Length: 114
Length: 109
Image (cartoon, rainbow over all chains, first blue to last red; front, side, top):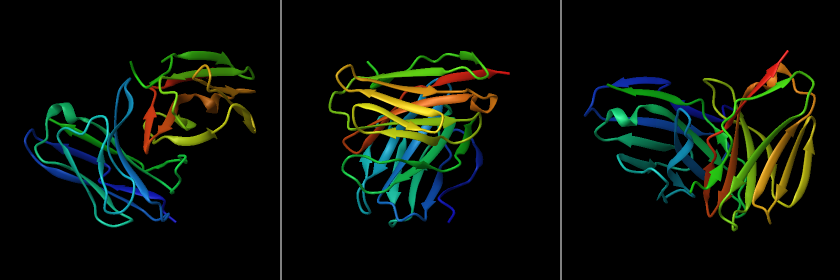
């Protein structure tokens, strides 16, 4: 049982390049989330998917797109990377509950845009 | 105004002391409350969840929730150097989690 996995672990991009961050969970969770973490800023929600087939914007969605490929996988795409997108990106998942339940995080992707 | 506010610290306590971490939130409709521990360079790890007013204890950790004051706290008893980390407060509201910026805790041997 791997939990939440993310690829790649590290990435360096040049301004204007595109890339997709991959996330998968094997816990049969309905909800999945993408966050970015910048120094002193805590975690900020980019996009989330409450269930397979649905996605919604979080606090900081500009410059990103997501795809909920199936129940297990939730990808984050940067179409034209900018230096302001240099950050650590975390994927998380949680089981279904209307009251909110615990999130489980992947190991993170450290992205640098030059 | 941020949804979730925490003192960034650092909070320094000697080994064996009680560490007290605090968090306030702005939305009265918030449903669930969590504390995560994050070591440098690692992902957040859930240590406590609390859903109703009062105290919840788990080992050396006690979470306290006061919905009237919109206040959540975490007490760590018998603090150990291994507790040195950043502690993130999170609030769940309408399908979304909102995180504070974290409090850095240093436990000195």
